[in-house]
Image (cartoon, rainbow, N blue to C red; front, side, top):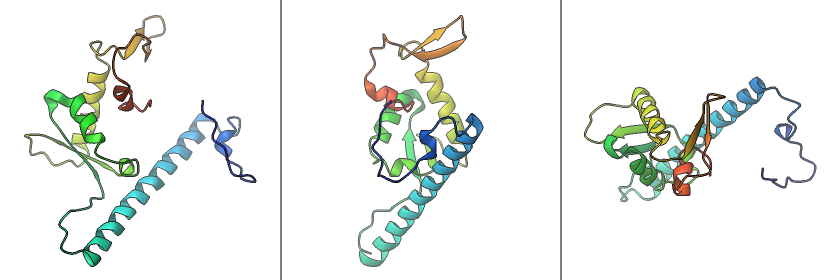
Length: 158
């Protein structure tokens, strides 16, 4: 666990685990995520508008979405490649996924399928990233994995 120094005089309720139950923490985290996503979209819209006004000759577009272009046959590697193109603030934008060679428009279903396929691939024993414990019927990070740390970045453990 990391300790993050806080400005003096400020209280952060999430630092006190006895104040919120699991359901309340879920609501706090979902609300924070929603606010951060909306902020990232607003920032992208502001950048696009500013670019159109002050640099109309530049043709690069600024999207309100995080767009990933991945191949079903190379899903893990393509996802890592695509994610490395973006900075941290862009990762907070809503996700749109396009499978290469497919014309499906992502209205949520493609992204849902993407996560299902990605999770199935990452949990595959060939990567050795996770270990299944029969007695508890749970999976946890394997100590014996030979995978690069970037693979754990995909599951949010970096």
